[in-house]
Image (cartoon, rainbow, N blue to C red; front, top):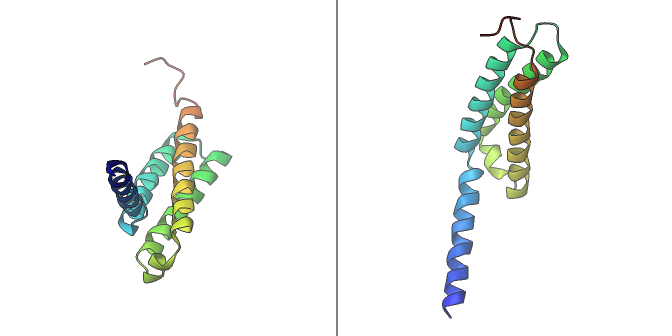
Length: 111
């Protein structure tokens, strides 16, 4: 009997966690973080690199996503679709971080 109650509580906690992750406000916060990372990355990258173009594209997508989350239609998206969107945002964030690590140093001098 206690196992059944424990299972119900665990399921409720999982639903609350997922609801927080797919909340429009959470998407806006994550999009803002990714945009800030993209700004930092664009300052580190060389102006003629493909990397800069990719980072600028991600930054534009984050701006579009922020606007989309303000629309009532966003709440009508399925939970699965919002989870996929969240995973895509996480991948974009990881790509930007990797790009920043791969970027050449701005000077040849060791600091």
